[in-house]
Image (tube, rainbow, N blue to C red; front, side, top):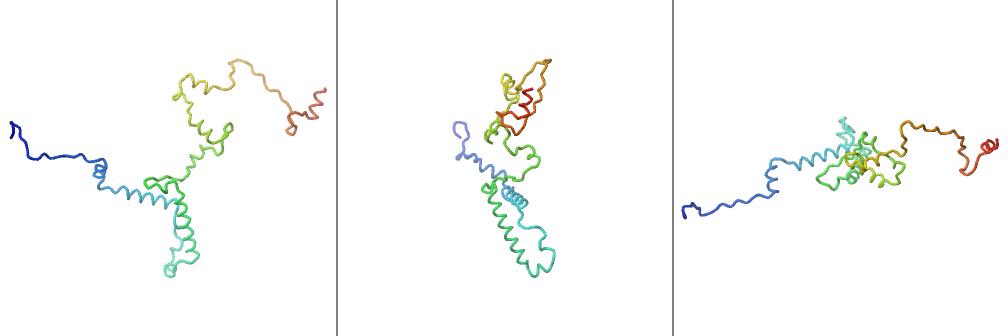
Length: 186
């Protein structure tokens, strides 16, 4: 005891564990990485099956004699194609990621197969689709001109109908057909 304060000979030092150690302690009993690898293998086997289920497995004769040579070749071809397909996957080099390569029929209905008319390339089209034109993302002063129609008529104004004109699709733009020349003379 020094000056009325109790002191001990050795002070226990406490160090804060690192983030990595805390995570290891929190998930000590869980084997998440192995579970994830198993899940990924199951998904890969569903998308690219190794063998057709049931081929050569329903008789005792094939178990005794073994598989026929044509079936062994088919299994070898299937295994080779599966390995090539697995190498081409987007997540082949990514250990901790599963990317589903199945195409959704619902999503295909919403996607365009070709670039729409006014656009000349995919990049220009995607750039225009990225820019939102809604009132939530644009100020009112710019939202109006973005959504304004090209032709604006006041209510109650009479619009003259289009006159019918016969056009021959085989005529060149600068030439008039014989029929139209006769009609113009009369």
